[in-house]
Picture 1 (tube, helix red, strand yellow):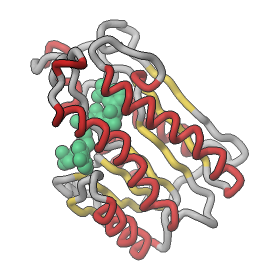
Picture 2 (spheres, helix red, strand yellow):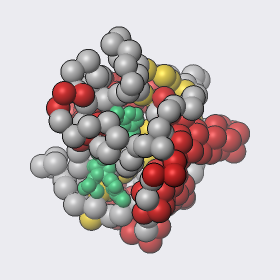
Picture 3 (cartoon, helix red, strand yellow):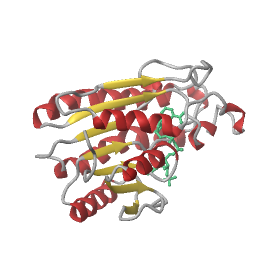
Length: 233
Ligand code: NAP
């Protein structure tokens, strides 16, 4: 199915998986609303980009409203913005605990809540960038797993509400991806951890595959992992 002329809002679009996806969708003729704290438009002509923290529902609403006004509605929302910090539960700071739940879980709810009113009545897609950490408990990732299981559960349950309205809900669950995110606390801050991981483009291609399926088919969840199994698998 061609995506040409569709309208997509992507959170966490300034770097990593979100930026790779924005570039791929732009190349396919998709009109974009891009959210990140930096407000980077990636140099993509015509994109609506605003500085937008996904912990702020009002900021997300402003971005979605501006995108819908510019392009006549929204067809696709990708809740992708995310942060991670790893380590034993008791050693995680209160700030890390709050940030992971607020950005990863509440930020997903907020992004979808802001976009959905503009999607009703259209053949839409809700894409949640979850993780392998939303499918199984991983050591030293208890809070990150909690946020990712939350995203997965929310999106699966939302599917019951939205399928009858013509909107598909898909969880994308990657293992380790070589982005800035991969260099976060607990994993190591050197590029030594990156070889063998998947690329942001690998993940973005899977999202595009799900979006391009004909409308009689919906992909509920995809799990993708690198061939080199390791701590980040
Ligand atoms: P990344 O390269 O670190 O990019 C994260 C993006 O999120 C950036 O664009 C960042 O932009 C944005 N962001 C962070 N906090 C934000 C906030 N409060 N409000 C708005 N935007 C915010 O990460 P990534 O690897 O692409 O990760 C994308 C998603 O994939 C995340 O949900 C992550 O949990 C998931 N994931 C990643 C991996 C991995 O190994 N990399 C594996 C599985 C799943 P600004 O800094 O400009 O705000």
